[in-house]
Length: 224
Ligand code: NI
Ligand code: MN
Image (cartoon, rainbow, N blue to C red; front, side, top):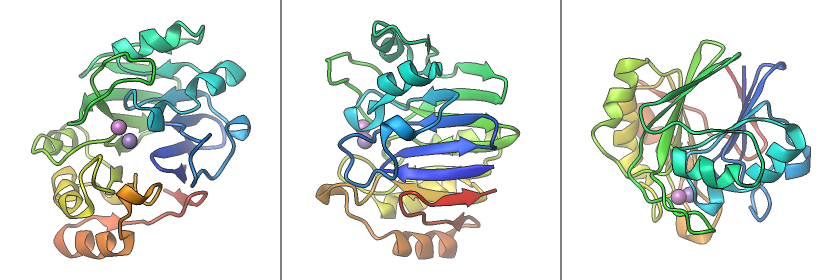
């Protein structure tokens, strides 16, 4: 399976058959690796309602017909645009041909550009039996350890940029709690307030935990 970093918190998971698109903030993202018109999706998954996560979701959903998974209140706002939505809440699982996605808590806020208030989430994804955990935007909190206890995690996609989320120092502890085989950092260096040193994060995590860190530039792919 290919995990492609599209910049900021956006990724695709693909096996050449299905493509899962996460948090497709491409238009207006100075680090976007692809244009919204060019990205493939058979499903779109959103962690929360901030503009740097919803991004181009509606336009991509309309073009591709891909269903969009988001927490209830956010899904209902997006559904008013005429796209196909799935509306779980925290703890809920949505099943697909390729696997499933489950919403876990994340400590953050979530108000959409249109003003809908909802609760942010992390996404635990089973994609063809590989377990990927996109933490969403979050601070460090101890319940991160519960996710891997329920489903041992192959790859964690983890914010490290600080200011709007945990910084790379807190993210070292998050990596320890999550216990993934591989950690891929994200949500850093997109804008000046979230500049971070991913090479130092890699060094610190690999010193302190059993996880391996793969640093991807926007556009690069990690193959599991
Ligand atoms: Ni956010
Ligand atoms: Mn964000």
